[in-house]
Amino acid sequence: MTLIIDPPNAAGHGLLWSHLASDVSFDELHRFARALGIGERGFDKDHYDVPAERYDGVIGLGVLPVSSRELVDRLTSAGLRRRRGGLRAPTAPGRTLQRPARLRPGACVGVVAPSGPVRGDRLDAGIAVLESWGLTVLVGEHVRGVDPSRGYLAADDDDRAADFATVWCDPRVEAVVCARGGYGAQRMVDRVDWAALARSGPKVLVGFSDITCLHQAVAERLGWVSVHGPVVTSLGEDDQAARDHLRLLLTAPEQVLDLTPRPLRVLRPGHAEGVLVGGNLTLLASGVGTAGVRRAAESLVLLEETGEELYRLDRLVTQLLRSGWFEGCRGVVLGDLIGGGDTSAAQALLADRLAVLDVPVLAGDAIGHTPGNLAVPFGVPTVLDASDRGGTLTLTLPALA
Image (cartoon, rainbow, N blue to C red):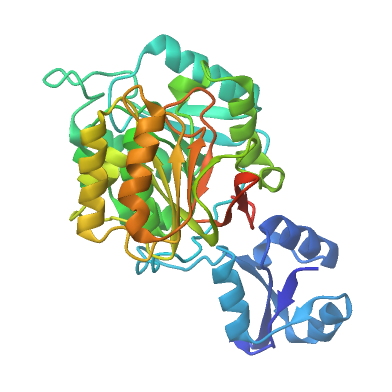
């Protein structure tokens, strides 16, 4: 049993109260509270309030008594701590981020276009996939638009930022899936009302490529786990295994702890543990020196890219190295199609440039711009193992609570 309770030392309504919590999942906590006959009104963001007279009885049912400090520390380590108020102080790099709740049947998913314009047929095909999972879909106002003055954007910067915040803060919405990547997220990210997003509570962001900018911001400004995975327009075209992987990660995350269905190529052997951070190499390099950047310290770095010549890959990684972004990194995983046509040469180049980090390096993960783009969570503790048998990535906690 992973349920915990602190001593009855919180005063309220003329009584003393304990805090009942789980350091694994809210599901477990809610089930136990229902069995105790504690109503939903007793739930306060990340715990249930239990009156002092029930403290001994709850412990008698097998709940572990801990100090109030330990209860908070365990919730924080598990990514289940939910604070009151608006924007929180940035979580230190390498720390476990707060895990949003998993999606239930009938959950509402918001679709936004923070970057480029979206092809209607591909959007409709992806929405049909989401609906086939038993989800309802809310589409942002400008998702089907094109900025008349800049055709490479779905709408102007203010409208894309407003769409993102409006959909996210809609009380019906439990997750936000980006319609596509392209270019433009960096233009709108600083126009988003992040304090309003914080007040709306943790929700999971899904996307890749240009969405790397938003993954970084969600981690740094909000302290929440997000999912690097297929965008809506790729869902209708991706293979079934990738779709099933994302569906389970969002709805039954305890079934998706293995992030490497096939062993990866070992470029540098070793063993490392840390939360995942990273995304698209170009977006990470171009974000250096800007607000809302999540650094690689005490973390495992995930890098994906496509269509870049070797000298450009060299320049991008060199920029991250010279800026200190990699400082304290514990391991690196390279995507499957990381290069302009010559994957082996690109992997060899990056292995050489990253050798100065003296950390294990894996290559060939099916993430990002590759058929079968497998979703992975940022901010969740993960084990990287690079041995003679090949490389693996394994989550130590489910991606969502």
